Length: 340
Ligand SMILES: Nc1ncnc2c1ncn2[C@@H]1O[C@H](COP(=O)(O)OP(=O)(O)O)[C@@H](O)[C@H]1O
Ligand SMILES: [Mg+2]
Image 1 (cartoon, protein in one colour):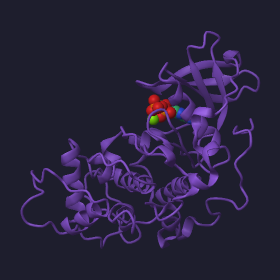
Image 2: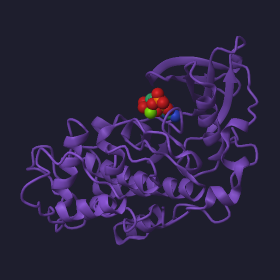
Image 3: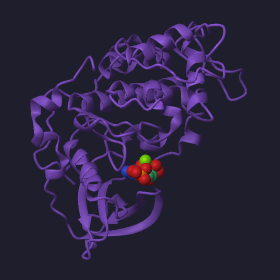
């Protein structure tokens, strides 16, 4: 059970979290033109486009004909997040006349590819973007929503404008707390131990784990070849004692204690080095030591690990805390759509 925001959905009631009953007013796709393909996969095709009414660059996410409720879930979550800091703004939802394709129209982010970006980020950059990501997460968590698939491909960064936006709110992973029993797919590298063993009653803290991994991903650690190897890598960083404590907090017993889980207990990797005291490693440096701030999110039992708000309040973010994440009184819009 989460230490924070545990009863948000219960308090707000069914109309808040039941996306099946969400009424969607579809627009016609005529207003938008496709410019180029940005990405996509099994469930969607994503294009950069242009809004012919105001010549704005936009993104059209065409959801493939999957089960209707999945489409509703992503749209409901996106609409709910209108006005949320650093979350992609939903501008419109369109449906073709034959009712075959349903698309989300969102703001465009001139994203710099992560593989070329992360090696260029300075320490202040990292603090800035991590703070932006945590503000987004604190906001969504406080509204009873978890992302569940935080990873570089779902975090768009416009480095010129120094803006970050969290995207991909729902086609298969994101949901509200009310329906937490669906299994999570997605990138192994960013998954917390409870997800790697298929534990289903997870909470917001899994987004904090992924955030910690994103921090660490800049230094290529925690990259397992399968779920067991991923757990092993996590255990080697946390040390046996903390790793076992983490599993105990979820009452998880590992069936297979093969491949290195047995034998001599592993000490934790020392956390003496940190971003404040040590320069960032380059790719030619020796294997990295995770920074206190990255292990702060990962190396704890879920209950004792920091929430997004607590992480933001830490000394690490002292220099970026000027404006704060969520502005007082900021409310979710009634319509659920950002103004254009
Ligand atoms: N608003 C956006 N601005 C720029 N690029 C985007 C935007 N939305 C999506 N993309 C690109 O499209 C890819 C897939 O989008 P996403 O919403 O994550 O779809 P999927 O559910 O298929 O993962 C992203 O990884 C990114 O490269
Ligand atoms: Mg995605």
